[in-house]
Image (tube, rainbow, N blue to C red; front, side):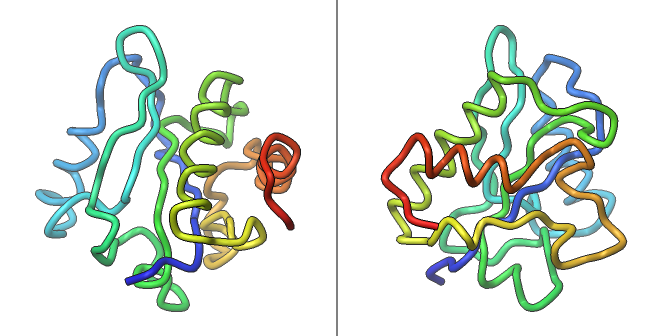
Length: 148
């Protein structure tokens, strides 16, 4: 699989400032019955700073956005937090920019193919009402050598 899109999500849970990535994986595997966590990457506050956590391997189909075959066509990134109540803080934002910038380069994905889950499922607000996907893309263009 060569991903064509990057889809941004939020966990809808409060980031408790401990590593909860394992709890998300456990929920996906043991409650939902999936073979692994649904996302390729996660970003959360762990101990003293924001970290990027690995999920499914990048060459594996995910389970984060079944609409329009996006589980096969995209990489899924989960920002741990509930961005329906407040925006992600600046450190998390910059960690996300760093990760996505790298993925754009490695997989030659155009910036306009960064989307929120809500773009594919109108019942979702994901990655949250206060997560401005357009600003995120603008920040990538402004700070990198990407073309919209």
